[in-house]
Image (cartoon, rainbow, N blue to C red; front, top):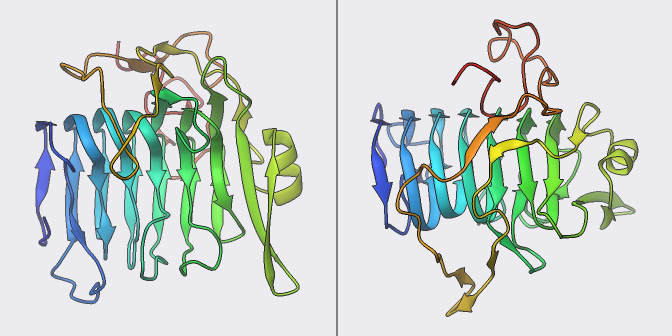
Length: 294
């Protein structure tokens, strides 16, 4: 699906491979393709691959307020060639990736802003299951200009995978699926012409070493409910697709609003034009401002 000026809002979509896919890449300079799009307030569930697949030119595209349940990947941004893309206030339960940026054969230098999204992993038990932000490894494709702020993730294994100096990452909250090891943060840097990667087992160590996540938080966000959190084991068939059982009947499962005792309340990084008009003072991390959706 590509074309200028399309809006996809307030739909209920389930049972497809991809749900909403305004994808047109490799020819981004044809600006009548994949631009000036609104993808807002859709209910998306039981999807075999990407809940929202915004890939290619992506000129002036807004992905806002969508609810995704039981999707392989919540939001795919692989690649964004032109931008800007705005991804705001979406919430999701995912099996493999909350944000996918790692698959592409072209340049992905388009500005992409991911603010105030919430998600948690339905899977546990495999090395790469349930990753929050998955960048490509350095040197694989030209990529940069990706901004992640004020998002909340419960993930299994990697919170950030293959981060480096090309990205702006700050003020996000990370927590691990119950019973699993602490979240891992993987950083890459170029040393003497060679790329070297280092894994950090705490957000504090990751921040001290890289300068990212100076306002980040490593704590249980205390979602109101997290039905199915970490309950599914990864199951391979064919390639590396996952089984999606038990399938959800609707999007009512899971409630990613914050409880009143959540450490994410009043902890968001201020962003002009995004969260500077909060009624109760300071903005909250995640997709929902506490008390506004009751």
